[in-house]
Structures are given as C-alpha cells and as structure tokens.
Image 1 (cartoon, rainbow over the protein chains, first blue to last red):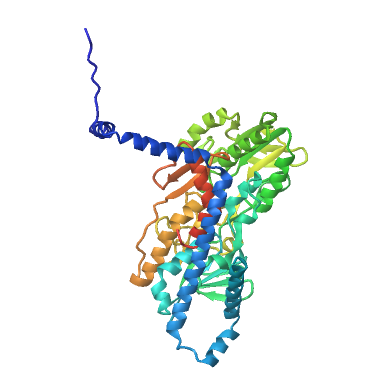
Image 2 (image 1 turned 90 degrees about the vertical axis):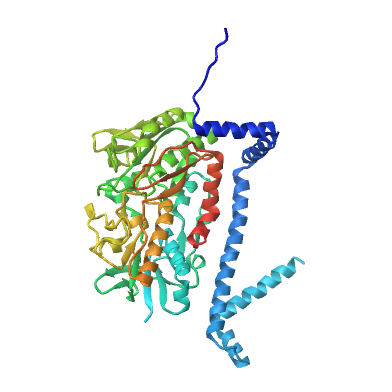
Length: 117
Length: 396
C-alpha cells in the first residue's frame, strides 16, 4: 500500500512553487539558469588586478566629472555676477593666477590630445 | 550678514560634511547667505583604512593619499591651519597661525589618534596598521618573518561603552594575516594568537565587542588554526624579551605584536574642556540623535571624536553625515533640526585577502555575521580605491 506524504507549505512557499512551475513549463527557466551561470562565471574569472584596473578607470571618470562640474558651476556664478568683460577686463582676468593656471592646463590638454593624433 | 559654517578637520568626516553641506546649501551659497570654511592641519587627505592593506603588501600606500583641495567643492574655503583652541562661548576657533575663525555653526570632525604611550612598552615593542608609518613597519617585519608567533592584542578606551577605531579591524587583519602567510607558504611555521580584553564595550570575556559575532568567532578561528584567548587585557610590554603582560596576570611571548593600540581624541578637543571622558580620552559628549555636542546648540560632531557606542569608522561617518548636514540646513531654514541618527553603520569587512563580508547594524540591533564572498571582497576593493573618493566628494 502506497503512502501519501503531505508537507505543510506556507502561502509564500506555495507562491514560489507556482511561479517556478510556470517558468519550468514555459522553458524560460533554462535562460535564467544560463544567466546565473554567466554571472557566476564572471565572478569566478575576475581577479583582484582586473578589479583594480576597472575601479581606477571609474575613479578617473568620477574625478573628471567632479572637476568639470565644479568649474562649470563656478563659471556660471561668476558670469551671472559680472558684466561681460571688455578687452581690458579680459586682460585683467588673465592676470589672475587661477585663470592662468586653468588656461595653461587647457593648452597642455590640447597638446596632449595633439600628441595622440 | 553671511552665516559662517566652520568645519574643523580634513579627514573622512570633515570632507564628506563640507561637500554635502555645499551641495545641500547651494541655493543659500548662490544668494551669498552662507560661507563654508574648513580648517585642517594638513594639506593632504589620508584614507586610513587603506593602511591595513599596506601591512600585507597589497598596496604601496600612495593610492590612499590625495591633495585635500582636489577633494573639496569650490564653494568650500579650505585653510591649512591647526586648531589649537575652541571657544564655544564666543563662537570662534583659534588656529596655530593666530587667526580666529568665527562661526555660526561649528562641526568638530577631528577624529582620533593612536596613543600607544598609554601602555608601557607598547610604543617600542608593538606594531599596528592604523597609520601608514606603522603599517609599513609591520609589512617589513612580516616580509622577514620565517617562523614564530604573531600575537594580536586589542585595547579599549577606559570610558565605558566606547569602541576603539574600526571595531572589526582586529578580526579582519588576523584573517588577512592567515591568508598572507598561507600565500607565502609559511603558515604552518607561524602561530597566530588572537586575544581580546576582559571588558570590551558591550561584551565581557568575549572575542568581539558584540555578542553575535563574539559567539561565532571561535569556530571561524578554529577552522583556520588561529588560537584565541579571551580576558587578555594588555597591561605592559617588555620590548627586550618580547613579552606581553595582561592585567589578568598572564604573560605571552611573541615575535611580532600586532596590536590595536589605545586611541584618544585630538589634542584640541582634549584641551577644550568640552569632554567628560575618563582618563583625559577626550570623547565629545554627543546627542545620539541630533549629533550635536551636548549643551552646545550650534556645535555638531561626528566620526571618531564622538562618545557614541557605534564604530569609529567610515561606514558610520557616511550615515552620520547625511543626518548632520540635513540638521544644519534645517536649522538655517526652519530654526530647528529635523533629522535623527539611528546609529546605522554599513560596511564590508575584509575577512581574509579574498573574502568580503557585508555588515550593517544600528543602535538597536547588533551586527549579524553573514557569509563572506569573493564578490564582497571586490566591492570592498572598489570602495577603497575608487568609490571612497567619490563618497568623500559628496557624489555618493
């Protein structure tokens, strides 16, 4: 005589079973397993040096974003505060050390781009 | 009249506060109503948790040091000057240069410092990874180590219920040491002994400062052959014979003493008369919810300077900053603080060289040990070497 074993399931367990059944019946479970395998493989194959190089690139992008955002905000505020400078006013602006520092940086940046062309 | 916000300290807490305040108060700054000034005794910014990687030759050290100005938004006026006096009655901080910095709101973010001289012989006989110089010294010793014993000791402040800097660090470094020696192929020739003091914040005679972790640590240490000993409160060190003595009357010999040394608040805080901590440790009496210094309505504090029971770590500061910044902004806009700190700490512990364990807790719930993973280790590494700088800049 066969014996029927019944297990008590919570409503959550039943819901998970129903949803998994639907994934199995429609064959989509295979894609999900493939996806999990790909994610798992990526973790397995990633090494500390790879992570270091990746985060270095992210840091460079974040730094560039931070510098640019600061500079744009500053320029907007200064432009709103002051009138459009005359030619003499431009020269006065050029006398400022920070302006010259920024300009020299921009010129060197241009040179750096030029070197790669 | 412009409102002056003065931040003292250019570490994690000060830098995050300055940038987040500038972001939050941008409308007021644009209208010329608010000025934010930071004074720090150094023009460089040091990411201190990086030092433990230096100890195990996983970083050179320079990766964790940057120019302070490069981390601050342009709206933050940055001045290199060492704060030497805090006058909370007349609302100014005096610098070593003689300059008086007036404030309407003051943020004290001066951190804490190693005070190894509080244990006789520790300065000469011990090593620690809480500073780059210390970590480099330790790295040299580990590189030369062929056999013998590494003894790990942990020290807690005398003031009750206050942790040492970065609560999980002694566990992290013990496990990193195990992995490092295994990588070198000499683990079997070196005995690692992890000890913990009798009184450690919330726990007595345990291996960690919170019970759930303290309970599982023996099993974890046993699995990697790390010997462990409770009730070993370091009393003195004899550097000549390389022997550590405990308050409980035990002694233990070592080849390397990897110690979590005593910590105290910065000198300017200790001399300010604001602290009531024992043994001149200088922790600031802090309202656990508003993060104001108790008794001072316009002075806030956060990070390693506070007398709260939560960890003195970046994962704490990251959560405190948002509350503190919202409260200062609300005070300016509505006349009262609106946010409340729940004690939240979020971090990833480096449980060995290749395994990271996410952890979180708050005033109400202790940290629950979870399995560490390779992915967790990558996230921690990513934070150390990249995301930290974005967080310090107020971008995260």
